[in-house]
Length: 250
Image 1 (cartoon, rainbow, N blue to C red):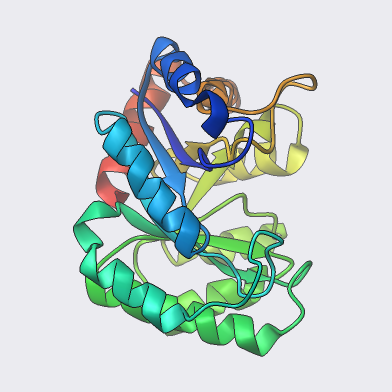
Image 2 (image 1 turned 135 degrees about the horizontal axis):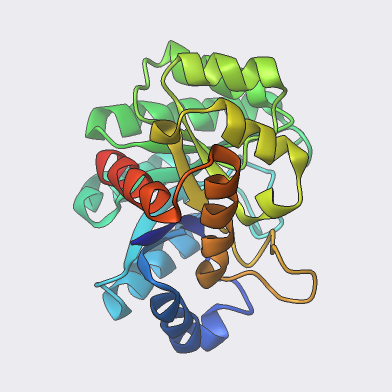
């Protein structure tokens, strides 16, 4: 019952060997893989992947911080894309990734406007949101709070401890990436956040736990192992808790 709560199966290195990637995941014991779109093209590709592997893959509807992705050749109509979400709401498990990125995005107000629209639609549709918050952790938390979002997952959250606490106190959840095997920041997050607010992700093909391998969903098992070690729990107990979290949020 392992879960990869966030990855990008449409990226090069995964999409071109997708049958193998899914088989590897099944052999590793994965019950579900959530592949995330980030723009109009990849949202539709996520649905196509689900149609190929409906028993294990779920789709997440993404609007990556506007102007922050090198994969967006041009700005697109966020309102029109949100209409696509509304028309296909039952085909998308959650909304994300969405949020703010002050590292690569230059126009903060443009990003905030797009993010606000996504939050409004997600709330209207009663969808969980998975948040990208690079160098913008506080603003993301405060915008989710101001919009009254209840079902929130902070994806690969790199904020300081007081921001982890702020998000946790609001009832938000956190995905633990496979790099937890080597990064102290995520290890400390695991120690501080109750298991009932944790999920595991690969963000594959990025953030591999192995130096010489491209990340893929099967490797999410490494996050579970590390959580079990840090929490002093049996891995079966970790799997059961995260499975229940997944059921609640997805």
